[in-house]
Image 1 (cartoon, rainbow, N blue to C red):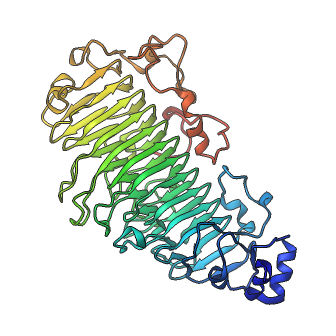
Image 2 (image 1 turned 135 degrees about the vertical axis):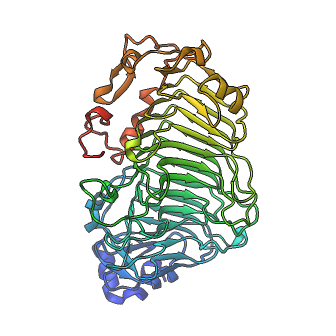
Image 3 (image 1 turned 90 degrees about the vertical axis):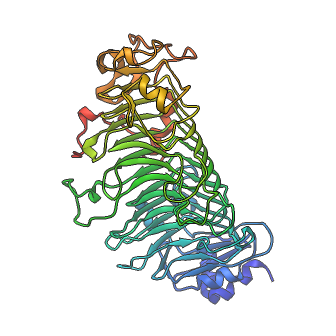
Length: 527
C-alpha cells in the first residue's frame, strides 16, 4: 500500500478528493475541514507531509508522537506556496485565510517525551475564543529530568501564533527541547494582568535554538531563557541565535498612552537571559518598553538561580551586536550574581556596534544606557552610538574586572560613567572598573578632567557631526572630527551599514520607507 492510499484512513473518499484538489503526491496526508488531525499525526511516517485544509479549524490539544528515523514530518497548509511569503520572509496576519487554524481550550500542541523531527509551515495556532491559555505550544513542560526525555528537531516556519486579543495568553512556545527553530513567524498577544507572559520561553532545554526573523510580542518578556529551575542537572540553554527579529510591546498596552485599550497588562522587558550561554543576538529591532512591573530596562543579562535549586545557572559568552534599540526607559542591565540564591558569575558579554536612542526617563526609567551590578567579568562595550538621557554606565557592588569601553558615542549628561559612592569618571573607574580600558569615546558634554585624554569631549551633540540626526541618520558626516578616530582607525560610533538588516527586521525583511524617527521628530504619540 502506498502512502497516498494510507491517507484514506484519515477521511475516506473525501480525503482522496482533497488530495487531488491540491495536487498531492505520494507521502501526503490530506486533512480536510472536519478531518482528524491527531489521526494524521499518529499514522504519519518520517518523510510525510500532512496538508491541513487552508482556512479550516481543527480543535483539540494535539500530541506530537514519537516516530522512528530522522526524516521530517511536515505539517503545512494545503494552500500553494505562492499564498505564503517566500522562505526568509516573515508572515503576518494578513495571510490568515491561507492558514489552517489549530485551536485549543487546554493548549494546542504538546510534544510527547522524545518526539522529534516535526516541522510546521504556514499554520496558525490560537486559543479557543475568549480563552486564556497558559501555553499554546509545549515542547516539554520543564519536568523532564534527562536529555533523553526532551523532544528535539522541531521547527515553526512562517507560522502565526497568538493569544486571545481580549483574554490574552501566558506563553506562545514553551521551548524546553533540543534543536528548535522558530523562523519567519508572527507571535503576538501574549499578555497577562497578574503574571509574566512570554512569546517564547525556555528553562529546561539544551539547545541549539534559532529564533530568526520573527515578530515577537509579549507583555512580560518577549523572549526569556531561564526564569525557572532546570529539572535536568547542570543544564544551561546553549548555542542560541536570536537574529533579525522585531521585539515590540504595542502602545495600546501603555496605561498613559492615548491609544491605551483599557487593560493593564503586566509589562517587564523585551529580552532576558537568566540562564544561558553561547548566545548571539544580532540584527534585531527592539522598541517600546516602559517602567511597569519592572524598572524600565529593555535588555536584561541577569543570572538567576530562580528557585534555589540550580546553582550552576550562568549568563556567559553573549554577543549583542548590530541591533537597534529605541523607545525605552533604560537600556541594558547586567547582574553578575544572583542576589537571592547561589549562582555562577556572569562573564564575557560583548556589546558591539549597536544604535540605541530615545533611551529616556519619559518612558518611566532612569534613562541609563548600561547598568552593571555585583561584579561582571569581561564586559566589552565597543563601537556603539548611544543617545540616552541618564548615565552612560552605572555600577554598584563588587568591581567589574576586564571592562572595556571603547569607540562609543554617548552623552556624558550629569554623570557619564558613575557608580554607587563614587564621583563620575576616574574615581568610578578606579573603584568599580579597576584596570578598565576606556579610550576613543565621544563623551558629549562630559568633563575632560574626569577621563583619560585619549577620549573626546565635544560640548554638544551638534558638534559630533551626525549626517542627519533629525531624519534618524546617525552616520558621521564628512565634516565630523571623529571620522577614522577609533582605536583601530575606524569611525567612532556605530557602523550604520551593519544595521541594514536591523532596520529591515522591523518590517519582516521589507526595508522601511523612512529611517527610524529621531526623538525630536517622533509623531507616534508616545510621551
